[in-house]
Image (cartoon, rainbow over all chains, first blue to last red; front, side, top):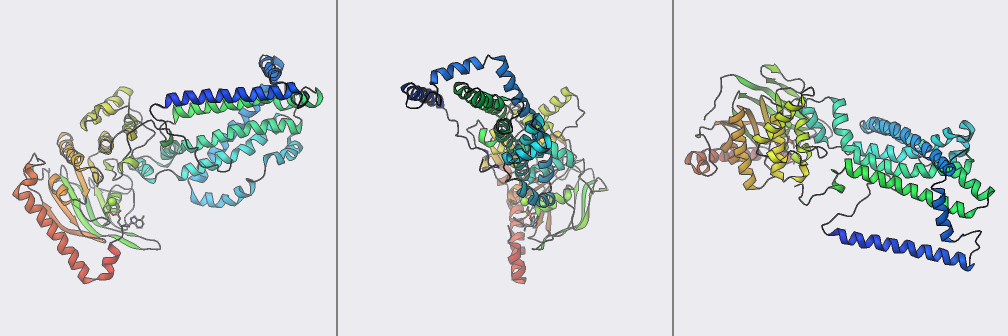
Length: 280
Length: 277
Ligand SMILES: Nc1ncnc2c1ncn2[C@@H]1O[C@H](COP(=O)(O)OP(=O)(O)O)[C@@H](O)[C@H]1O
Ligand SMILES: [Mg+2]
């Protein structure tokens, strides 16, 4: 998360890229297989004690079991609920503020100092404060998520608003559109790719923060809390590893869905254009 | 077809002047007085940086001029007038890349318009510029010439009384440019459109118009007004080869040359300031 305001560059899609993509998938699968084998061997041979690293095959089996365990899925749902609510609030608030600050140079320079002061505070460092104020329930998780995810969305929105072509705005004005209409029909769509990049970053940060908060604050429910119980209290490393893998899979799934959304609705942006004709 | 006017002036410009304030104060427009009669095709030719874009922004209500008044249909222009459409010089920035061609045109249609009528007006304006098949394409999937056609179609769909065009064909190749010029003559005939066409190309200004206004360098004034009484319909080869066409374009070229040498001789300081891009 070093540069929050740059769009992730994508390799251009070329004709005939199909076969190279297929071989990339094969290589990726082989990599996973190798990792799995190494983990299995290390554990089975006793190089690392099974209490620290259970055999990969056992962990994989636990993953399968957990994915159909209603009790476990309930905890996952609690985490995802906080994730969704937090992200939702973050998007509404940050995009609104970002649009306001982004459309006025004066407002932007006036708010800069405050933002630059708040931004470097690591959200995890706020857990004690959040617990003091909000206890250790869902509100605390959500508040932390909103705080930590607001920055990428806010900065990308401001950046996207500054990037709107003045000629595009002037065009809208020349066809009789007022300020509000121009904002909604020109500035927002034009900034949408930037805003969406911010949302993608926020979505993965939100998951990290949700689970961290559950782990560190001993939240009453959620995936993090479940892992805490399985590890410290239950002494079940196999379950902890399995839950970790599932957390990773959730992150992957979220990103996958967001990429699909972006391809569907923002395919006009230069990085995603499917054309071989130039715009000249 | 000489000036086919009904006698009334659609656009009247009185004492228009503009000064850009700021650290580098710059007087872009000195003083302009002219009229555009209803139904006329008037070209304005002037060197780069002489304030053509500035003038069009003042005429279209996008910018308030420092001096003078613009009247459209007798009413002074204070805000963006409904009866006027501006085709920007930079078509690729003026078209919205997130909207399809049809979406870009639909942008200027009244919001309450029923769906079928909306589709009909989009179709009609695309037909007028010869782009019937491109409705579902995105602007960036089209060539430069086609993009400019979309911008023209969009302006037509708005149904203005007058079309202002800012060096619309400055950045397309010669072949495309000739096609677009003839498209404008066709559009003018079909829609009975009044057109004010800004260019830096003397030949283009003569080929298209009933009347050519020649601008000086900044701060610009009108050097001369020339009636173009070339026969219609015009033809890219025959018209341009005609003796009368050559005579007109030569006269304008001489006028511009004489005017700029006189200015350079009279004040070196002023001339240096004029060469800003
Ligand atoms: N916003 C501005 N501020 C200051 N000077 C400007 C501005 N816009 C244009 N100018 C100057 O005014 C002059 C006329 O510009 P413009 O109207 O774009 O000329 P043209 O369209 O004839 O090339 C140029 O010298 C340009 O540098
Ligand atoms: Mg210009």
